[in-house]
Image (cartoon, rainbow, N blue to C red; front, side, top):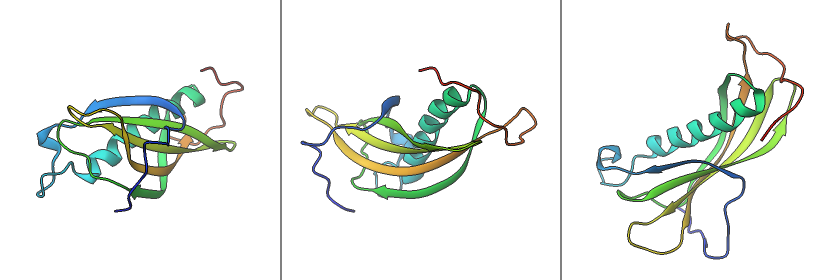
Amino acid sequence: MSEVKSESETPKGDLAIRVLAMPENTNPAGDIFGGWVLSQMDIAGGLVTKRFAKGRTVTVAVESMVFHLPVLVGDTLCCYVEILKTGRTSITVKIESWVTRQYKEGREKVTEGIFTYVSVSEDRVPQPFQDSYEE
């Protein structure tokens, strides 16, 4: 895992989700399972992209994922989503996950990744985005 200097860095994007890491989300080593973190990031990205699309979006790719630091039981995981680019039916976002550690000050970046979603109809067919995006 690479060390991140979080003190001078701030999250990029909008806060989309905040969740408490619980004991049932741990791996055999006692840290929060990476798949749980990835799923929280995917949920956060889905919330932002469906608002952009004014409808349903589905995850089509996780282009990169970097785990910098472990997430521990009792940490509050916060996922920030920044729109990187949009196409006719697709939207690519960068998602950063930061934690506030239980009983400690400050926050640390623990993961980041690039996710791509596609706008789909009720029949799960790709469809172009609506005309305008409302925050």
